[in-house]
Each structure stands twice: as C-alpha cells, then as structure tokens.
Amino acid sequence: MSFCRLIRRAFSTATQPKPKSIRAISEDLYRERNLKRLVHKFKESSEIYRFRTKSPIYEETVRRLATAKRFNAIEEMLEHQKKYPDFADEGFAVRILSLYGKAGMFDNAQKVFDEMPDRNCVRTVLSFNALMGACVNSKRFDMAEKIFKEVPEKLSVEPDLVSYNILIKAFCKMGSFDSAVLVLEKMEKKGMKPDVITFNTILDCLYGNQRFSDAKKIWGVMVEKNVVPDIRSYNAKLMGLALEKRSKEGAELVKELRSSGVEPDVFSFNALIKGFVGEGNLEEAKRWYGELVKSGCAPDKWTFEMLVPFSCEKGDVEYGFELCKDIFQRRRLASAAMLQPVVDGLVKASMIEQAKELVKLGNTNSYKRFNLKLPSDE
Image 1 (cartoon, rainbow, N blue to C red):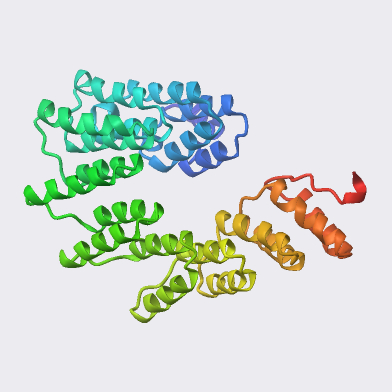
Image 2 (cartoon, helix red, strand yellow):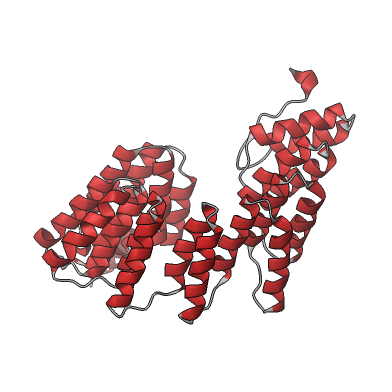
C-alpha cells in the first residue's frame, strides 16, 4: 500500500465520529423533553440492532408518550419497528404487542397479533398471553373472556397457568368475583395447580372490596393447597384492614410477619399509614413512617401524598416541613398543590425561616420547579 493511501486511511479513521454507546443513547432519550424529537431519535436509534434488544428503553419511552397522551406518536414509533427482521421473532413481536397494551391501545395490539403469521412469526401461548394481558392493561376486560374462549382453538394452543391468571385478573377488575372463582374451579378440573399469583389476584380483589368473609375462605383454600402466602398476600390483607379502619389489627399482623421471618415492604407500611390516616391518628402514622425508614425501605410518592396533607390538616406543619425535605432529598415526585399548603402553614405558625427554606428547595430544584410562594409574595 502506498504511503499516500496510508495517510488518507489514517486521516479518515481519525476524523470519523465514534459511534454512541447504547447507554449514551438511552441517556440522551431520557433527557429529551421535546416529544416529537424523542420519537425521531428513537426511530433513528432503532437502526442499531443492540438498541432493539433493550426492552427497558422501549418501556420507558412508551410510558412517557402515553402519560402525555401522545398516542399517534406511540403508533408512529411502534409501527416503525415492523420493518426490522426482528419482527419475525415472537419475542420481539410480543414486546410491540404488549407495549400497545400498556399504552391502552388494544386495537393496535390486536392488529400486531393478527399480522404475525403474515410476517412468518409463529404464534404460541406466549403471544396469546400477551394479547390477554393487553386486554387487561387496556381495560378491555370483556374482551379477555372472548379471546380466552376463541383464540386457543384457532391457534391450537393450550392455555397455561399464566393464561388463567390473566383471565382471573380480568374478572377481578370487572368486579366479577364469582366468575374468578369459577375459573379457579376450572383449573382444578384440568389438573392445573393455582399458584400464589392466582390467589393474590383474588385476594387483592376481595380485600379491596372489603369482602372479608370471602377473602378468609380463599385464604383457607390457599393454605389447603399448600400455597405459601407471600408479602403481597399479606399486603392485600393489610389494605383490607386499613379500609375497614382496623389498623391496630394491621399493626399486629406486621409483628406476626416479622416474627415468622417475612419482612414488610413499602406497600405494607403504606397500608398501615393509610389506615391510621383514615382513623385520624397522626402519632401512629408518624410512628409507622419511622418504622418504614428504619427498615431500610424507601418511602414512595404515595407515602408522601398521604402524610404531608394529613400533617397540615392536623396542624403539625413542622412535621410536614421535615417530610418535604425528605421528598427533595430522596428526589420523589411531588406537586405544588401538596407543597404550597406546608409553606402557608409554616408562615401562619411564624416559622418564616423554614418557609423560606422550603420555597428555595422547591424553586431551585433541578428536576422540577414548583413556583412556591410565601403568602406575602402574592
């Protein structure tokens, strides 16, 4: 090779931009605030095979667009994916189908399912379950039963445990508890053993609707079938106790959990806090918030949405102020509607310095500006 050609190759290699890593692309998409540009960048990035293997990026982007109700943008982005050879793989097609379901776009999910054979993509119980899941996520609960009855025969597939669990969830979401129990009986006849997810789905429904006697029966069946309750089973019970304003029993249940080696999670503590808030007991709500933090669990958005307004309602703005500082320290989602009453309460209690500190925290926050005001600023 001539010296000139070597020089030209070295120069072209040196000036060629280094391709972005998938992590860099993901961070760029996360930072993009303009949703039109977001879709453009996503489609552009989809040309890279490694990008198309990253389900979480797809999930997050669709979630953002769905939150903004940009359904046309979701369709543009997901329809674009059909041009790639990956769509002949059932796993990839199921991802697109499921994303439509999570966005509440059931008709689009159904279309993906119907198109799969035309694209040489085999449909198995995996895609059948994804379609069932899309029904539930799109709140098309009535369609779930229809699909369960009709599709398996057309596809020559046998519904599995996941299929039955989704059908039970659909009935529970419709409030058709009796239909959910009939599915449980049908599973038994087919020799299919329900698992903890099956029972948790029903327990969530029963405790959530304060049907304690029915929940007790289902709990008994679960024990009879040697299905070990998990933390979600207990959380359903805790939420039921909270709704019934039986929080002391809930607190005893948490003690029982701990003594049996099962550690409560943030949902367990939130259920207790909700119960004591509903009963007007701030001291107990504060105590269980302290237990939550001590346990190593991280309070979530729901924790603060319950406790901050309640502390103001009870006149304990100092505690509300401490909670607000915790929100910013933990970078939890909040709203001006939740924070401003704390500012107003602090001013009313002559805690001006704390009020100023909260206004500063809210208005100089890096991820969201809350435009909080001292009452005198109005």
